Image 1: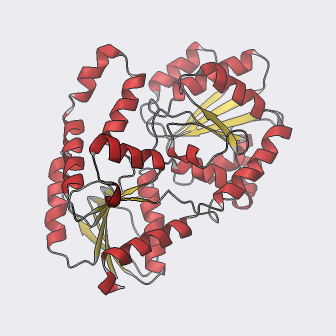
Image 2: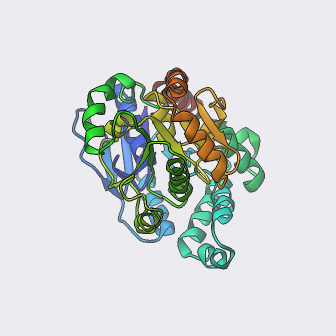
Length: 377
């Protein structure tokens, strides 16, 4: 089958969407499909066979990028076009970012009222909403929701008919992300992070630190330490971390919180950590939370994260009803600071991840491709 994947950047270092697409592309090539990538930028593909690359001129305008991608697609004779939420011409749209309207509503919960109007007047948000409307207006295309939460957003906020929506939750490579693969890195990474054996290391991986609620994670750590718990927090990958560095300094946590620039391989940090924190304001189905579960880490996240739908509160971690609930988050972190509590939860986390693998997700997409292009199967 000739398959086209459409996204802005085919580079696993750029973020969760890109990392997932990179791994998914490898699965499709291993299955013998002819793969075409339509994107503005590419990282080198180091194995053979490789996908066919179709570069699109980069523009600061999402609308112009989408139009350029549509033009490239018109020249290709593909059986299935699978768009990650970037353009408006495809057989199926798979928006990793979920619903723009839901994203807006959840962001407004954390943004002061005086900033809200200016925030949503930004041109890029208007253009993303326009692209999304065009995706939904394409009656021949299917929409993939990565969680029940997102499916409901598409149905209620956008009016997408139920029969055009398919639910395919995110999956994780449980060989790449596992306690066994991380074990050799644990001692050295904890040494580099100055974390002692008796200290609990909390981990947060995010590019968008305001949306993923790094502020509350830092404030909860301050409360935890003030009550005598020996703990540290590592924040990996954050763009524009300066406001959070200032908060850490203000709270006197400079020797307890480490900010790490984006890294190509996050597995050593999962290996070093004891608990994964993800108190997000909005996440359609967090890939990093799935990776943490696969690595055997209990996860603390919110019900605004699609991954919360598979986590049983108190079994593989804890769920927050309100991302701003500092007291409950602090209590959850204190509970997981006890090894006798978190170790059984870590085993349950790994078992849960084994039911949500990237291989299983790939099979779901291939079945959907066959539905869209039965003559090419």
